[in-house]
Image 1 (cartoon, helix red, strand yellow):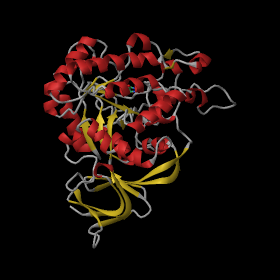
Image 2: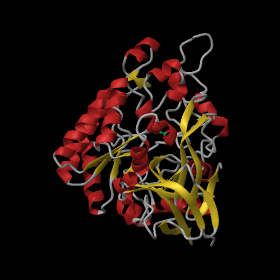
Image 3: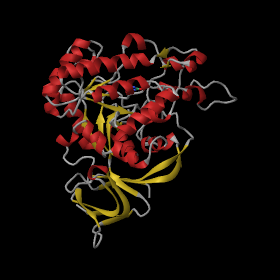
Image 4: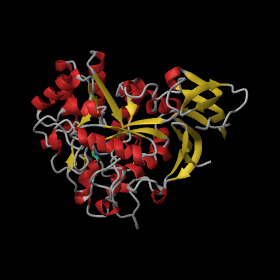
Length: 433
Ligand code: DOR
């Protein structure tokens, strides 16, 4: 295998506390050295003036295969990941069939090995068929390679079942990823419950739908001693609950999406329209919904003070027909892999963003156990590198996305933060030099 030398960039490797101009040498697919290369072996990527960091790790993405290949496939989703600087994506199990058996986990791994351009780590279901009635065979899923359990897209509504899931997952030292949404409070809701939903005449999802389940699942994590990871935290109240829980030493971690760090419910109102009409922008319809400016500020503060551990995209690609319809009927989700860095940089500083996209997510899900060195540029770590231009401006044009999901509320927006190249296991998988 060829060597690659990424030469002369500002190396940011938060796992090792490195922030210095250096060369990164990748040999035989792994990190060989970070330092001053006497001579640059192999192919040279000139990174002067750019930032060089570990490939990003996404603990929450929907790749849709099997079952929804018209929305995304493992191939297109991992290409989107590479364009976004991601070299690892954890694949959510709300496929058809869902990832609730060893065979289904193996399908994801085999498809990724055959078609994927970056690493895919499968997440298994908590309950059989994601139906919320019977626990899936968690030990079997774990043995097959599932790195976490989740019924994401839906909560585990039955608290006793969630407790049982945490007990078993704890024995397997595998986190349960919690889609915190109280079903009765959220029923029929299509956006955040607030003044915008009132103005548009749409049914809202109150903040309490999330917060009541965040509180429930923190209590269950404490009762069982097993770790719960809260997906896509979106409200100030949730951030406060997690902050207090962590202060008590509760085994809880949390993630936030770039869109919840940067957009508010007003995006539903102000999407692209003609003649000043109200937008009803279905591309801003997402679960949990975009919230208020106060919620956004709390998520940003929580991410910066360590209450929220990491950024996760919740990449949720949908087909055009799933979004080009009445607001109530539209699918929920934002295609997020290709805008994650730039959108995050609108909210938090570069150094924090790189940490929350690399070392932090790897540590949050304990991925080191599955992939030693992941999320770092340590010697011997996977040769996964993102080369970025934090000042580089670009305009979001979904038709250029590698993802089949063109569903973004950011169309036409000019953002700062460009992924110049991505190296996965010593191979260039994205090159926009
Ligand atoms: O907006 C969302 N879309 N939220 C979820 O929890 C699921 C996801 C999807 O699968 O489309």
